[in-house]
Length: 272
Image 1 (cartoon, rainbow, N blue to C red):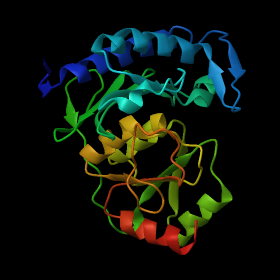
Image 2: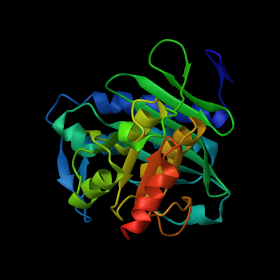
Image 3: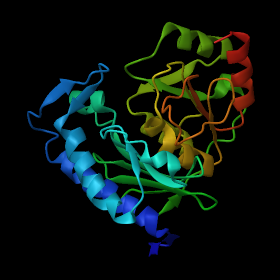
């Protein structure tokens, strides 16, 4: 199926429709007094998370593939399947609550433990980011499709990092200092940070937390890789999906690819 010059797989088109529908549901309550509460793990959940999950499920269930989602109980049926969906219905819930505009809907198609398609939709702007394995990464912000490419900068002193708005730690600041990175911005939504790198607006994102889960990175993984960047853990090891343990236990490192090995070496030297 072709959409404005970009050939989309049927599954990708389904994910696009699901993400847009979810975005509409999310925006329908964005400026209202929506409900918000804490889950057992301490993370925040809002009415928007649930509305988005419902919309996405109504579309993706048509594919017959199992789904791993932040807002759905994991029945583990997916472990016996070659292809699954991995979904974050509302990436950046805290920013949704704070109304910063920095949140997204993320859907990935995973095959044999790796993302082969990724969709990230930013409801506040209508920007749609799509990637398919071997076919590149693209953005459509209401007009035509534009191919995404990372910056080819390799001088760490000249790069721009994008870091967490809510969870930047002193140890992460130390890594940036050790790398000689003086220019960084803080932003909500892991997906939008990855988008910034895929678009060439930033060159590095890292987090030391062991609380990042597969739905936080799956769609972003495909988008960054197809734009020429790299995504690994902080020790440079590749990320694997559709495993029983859904956590990435050794942090996350996303870069334009040209600085990746240098950042990994620094992280290893600091024994992180």
